[in-house]
Image (cartoon, rainbow, N blue to C red; front, side, top):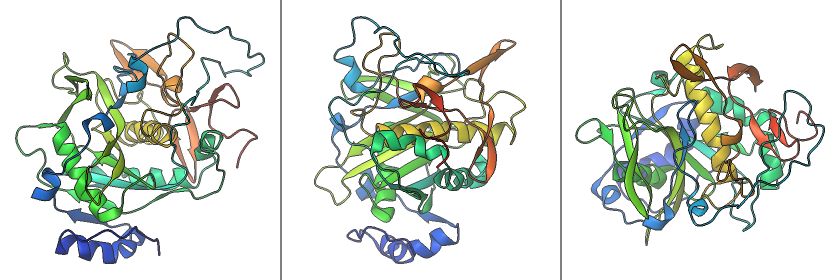
Length: 355
């Protein structure tokens, strides 16, 4: 049975869930939780939030890491890395000059908003495959750990009733859902929450605490549509729920976010899992926007491990993410590679070969 961090019980529902969390996880069931007034009023530090988005296929990321706004490189360094074997390439290595925190091990918690796993092609199956794969060990060079089974799946959760009004989730909605989820399954750098937003629901959030201008996932409003997903973290104040890491994955099988036609599992599954993989790797290596990203290249400044390897193809008037078929764990997927400083290229295997 997996161990779950003990938290003060905030309700009878939370107490019951904490007692039975291990059994539910082992049975692959999804537990419905309630977002209460205490979750909706939970205080958090605005400066702890600064989303790191995945832009639309064929477009640059709409915002840099918050730290990247302060200063940037004045020129590109020379490319002195010879001999990268084809089809590898050398855009720019990642750096962590301030030794920001990384995620050395964690449980991944899918959180389905007004929906269920099948609405997204069962992304928990991909998380299970990723956890046991060699692919996940690409992060070892950044985390300083190479043990197996470090990024396993934890409790799967479901939340109903959001968005409260209209069809757009705002930042405060996401924060309330996260507070409720972390009150049940745990908080800190040992937990990553993946919020899955159903088809037809938009997401609009401020770029950072210093820029309140919202950026959106909004396929129904092309003028505002600038990102497919993002990862972030939030610190709650004077609260048993302290620091929470999370990703937000709106419905990905839409133009601008979907994988190219003809993928091995179909557009819904591979579009969802490609983005989930992208955000998972970036959360592990740069959970707060203060760790591993490009510091020394003008054109790629602020890019993270996934941004450097995100590829697209144009078919007719539309751009799609374009990734090869690769084996992740026990199954085949169309998912992107991730950047390896060890290879100075995008890779699906850790330095030294399969783990």
